[in-house]
Image (cartoon, rainbow over all chains, first blue to last red; front, side):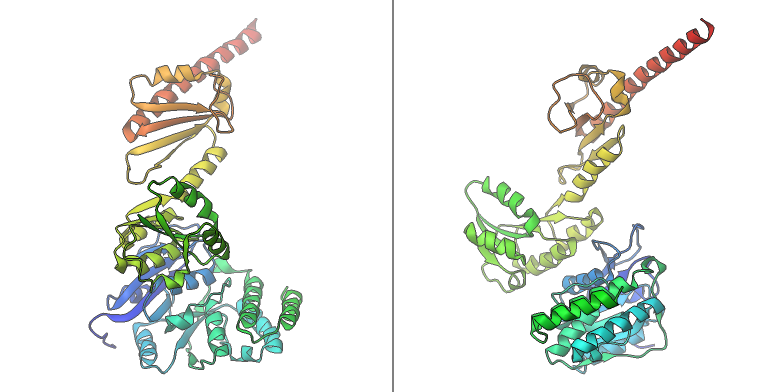
Amino acid sequence: MFQLRSGIRRVGVAGLVVERVGKAGKIVEDKTFAERYTLFYGYPKKRVVTRTRLIYIDPPLIRGKAVQAATIVLHQPVIVIVNAESRCITRDLVEKALGSIELGEQSILLLVPYTTKSLEDAYTRALDILKKFLPEASMLPPHPSYSLIIGLRKHLNVEAETLWSYEHLAVFASIISGNKRIEVGSTKCVDDVPTIFSGQALRYARSLAKSIINLAVKKGTLSKSRAEEAFKAVEEELH
Amino acid sequence: MRILLAVNKNMFRSIIDALSAVKPTPKIIVASDDEDVEVLSLQLGYEYKRLRDIEVAENLTDVDIAILALDNDYANISLLKQIKGVGIPIVIAVLHNKENRATLIGEGASYIIDIDSYLQTGITSLLLPDTWITVNPITPLQKFVVAVYRVLRRGLLGISINDLESAVKGIHIYLEHFNRFGTRAENPTISPGDFIIVAGLENDVKKAINAIETLFRKIEEMHASRISQQIRLREYG
């Protein structure tokens, strides 16, 4: 068993819950982290049991909003966002990942895909459209969302919104500003997205594609006329 | 007095209206990320700061009151944590989801304005007629409650507000009768769509509700028995 270091570290941790806190929720309760929150974004179930401070996210059932809320609420330089319902996340995994962030090897680390087949398909389609307009899109992570997001707060906190894959916005913003220290880990274990989110895959993909185009325009890597073409392509092809 | 007002565009007008009544006129520092709020506050002559700049603001040390009325609870919590170190004596936070009350208190809010309850009470009283709905309008006064009852079916009984007043005689409550548009009803007879408002301490309000319910049921029974007698008369007469 990997031993935790003693004392309080400059790390904030947030656990995202939509149904009930699972095994990974224990990591959020670890008192060596300076800030610990559980963010509940489920609905209509109203009660979750946790030892940390609990924040109810409005509007509910929007994962992108919940991840963004975590980056806003946590004020430590390094933040860990955990899917507290995950079967795959262990304390060792979090510690190893944190180690590489704290040593400065990476600035954003995404581990354990959190996905379903329909989400994957819609995401791949969105990615194909984006690649035509933005060459940087080829560097986006291969899966639509991840159960474990670790990184520096300044890179993860992006002024942009999306319905599902908020971490991708952070990654994209980092890429276009020249930060290449991003790693997407490959683990065999994959977390399934609860059925409550089923049937929304295309909407999520569309929302992500539009947000990325907007971000590219804002950062000056895509001209407005090209952006309009890209929006049109997204509207036509992601339906 | 110096007030730090972190506000979104939806709540800006109502809070500024409230603050303009404060005497002597306070110095207001507005903090927001909304462009609308930036323009408005500069036009009205307030100091304006972006939310990101609050953390490094030096002149917050002499702020007496902070009002946090941002878009959502986590934005309020985040700002609350930022200004914690400054030591502002009174922090008032607007609560959007009543489940977050404990977290906001835990983070150091001195007072909480619960807009969630008001909205819920307003909508529930419109959707659930003939049901008593209670709300606690002043958070620090936990025992003070207001009960709202929208009359629909029972509006046909022909009961007047005077009957209700005599039913709750001796109980220390405030009883009022409004028409469906929220203005004071001129006609003393309670008709469908009207609101009955009972305000007071929790125990007294409960007693008053029981007394009013007893009166309603009594008159309902009288009506029911009269109707059943009429039916019998028709059958055999």
